[in-house]
Amino acid sequence: MSFQQDFDLCLRARYPLIYIPTQEEERVEGAIAAAASSQGNRAIYIWDFVDGYQGNPSDTGFAQRNPLQALDLVEKIPPTAPAVFILRDFHRFLEDVAVSRKLRNLARSLKSQPKNVVMLAAGLTIPNDLSEVLTVLDFPLPTLLEIRTEIERMHSATGRSLSPKTLEEIVRCCQGLSMERIRRVLSKAIATHGSLELNDLDLILAEKRQIIRQTQILDFVPANEAITDIGGLDNLKDWLLRRGGSFSEQAREYGIPHPRGLLLAGIQGTGKSLTAKAIAHHWHLPLLRLDVGRLFAGLVGESESRTRQMIQLAEALAPCILWIDEIDKAFAGADGRGDSGTTSRVFGTFITWLAEKTSPVFVVATANNIQTLPPELLRKGRFDEIFFVGLPNTEERKAIFEVHLGHLRPHNIAAYDLDRLAYETPDFSGAEIEQSLIEAMHLGFSQNRDFTTDDILESASQIVPLARTAQDQVDLLQAWAAAGKARLASRHSTLSLRIQRQVEQSD
Picture 1 (cartoon, rainbow, N blue to C red):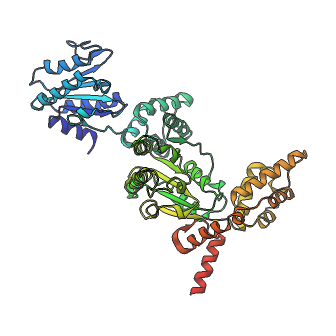
Picture 2: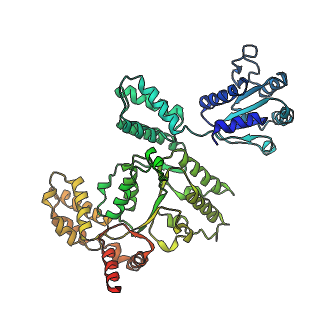
Picture 3: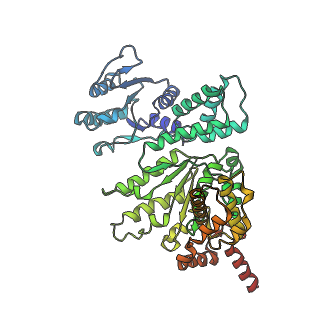
């Protein structure tokens, strides 16, 4: 049921006190006016603390700086006169004993009158003594249709045409913003170059970044890495490229649900975090990083409240990518021992949301230690797919060297023997390859010359890869993936070739 239908029903059912938590005063007041007009053109009275009542000539300025007097007007209007009273920021006065008692008295008397008191507030703060008499209605952010209509209205003033593809991308990117923010950022884009373009998506993402800065739970992570910056992982990249348009309106019309997310499990330094950034960049979506440690607070119940706040914020900014790095460390104590069950309750809230969410929040979780992950997290329905990211094979190491050297020495990449570099670095992860290049650059810079292939190999010889220092853990991870617990991210990895040989031998 839409807000308009829900509010209309509350008016007809004579709900006396309605509480609407929203920061979009102008838009919600327009919706209330439309509902009041559809029901016999009910009179509307609007009050705020500074100006008192507005809009009605006989009551203009009444009850300035007096919230209790503002409620008196409700009783002064004849009982048979249909009316809606909009009280802005009235949540600030609900703790006052006189205001609270007055509202409870009105809740009784208005049940038989065609009058409704609507309180608008930026957040949801209701005292216990009013919880039974107040009806809370959620006012959702603009729908796709509302956003599209507003974009077309604003762009029509430029006198230029807007391609359907550009319109679709801008509409999708504007999801999660209030109408006021949408108008502000679009006005900025039009003032910059006289029309709306695909380049304006960065402005819209910057506006979403402003919202994230106001919280202490999520971080807005710049995502400049492209899919081509990932060396290897062909199966994973193909999977992601096929879902590039899954957040579009055409996908909804086709019947495709919003993608749920990915769990990337595997060895450290193999590109799991890089993949999360590349997904956000390729899909033109904001990347929100969740530091699970920030969810846990000292006060009883506050951790669960922060978890719900995180979910609400992510859904408000949808479509977006929610990146949870090293989720295995975050929920290692989900059995509830040692923390009075706080971790277990937070984990329960989180996985319930994962299973039931319908919002376009794509969750990318990374994990290094599979053994500590609760089994509930691996159950089908939490994520679309679980990928195992193993150590790169020779061809993939060559691709990784090519990507890094393409950034570091794009004009001179032919001077490096990529085949030799890939061959001489067995068991190296992508992070270890990057570190060997950094060491080689230090070596060349200290001798006032450019670094060479030999410098890279010299640096690599000084690095002991994780595959050797933590061989037992790496073998355990590969055995877990080889048992068919996850889909392999690489098409021709060492592990995939081993599995293929096992299958051939069994046949």
